[in-house]
Image (cartoon, rainbow, N blue to C red):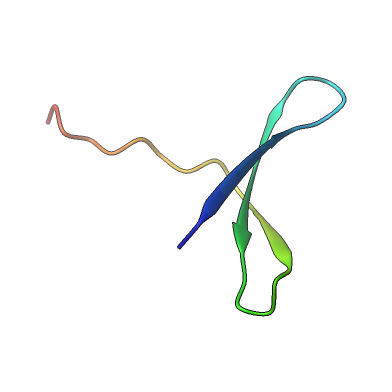
Length: 37
């Protein structure tokens, strides 16, 4: 799965995944992997 990050006008980071038909689908911010638990 390819996660694409974009910045919008306000400088906020937006996260998208590229679907199989080439569209971008907006996703909520992915949680960082918890390797320190």
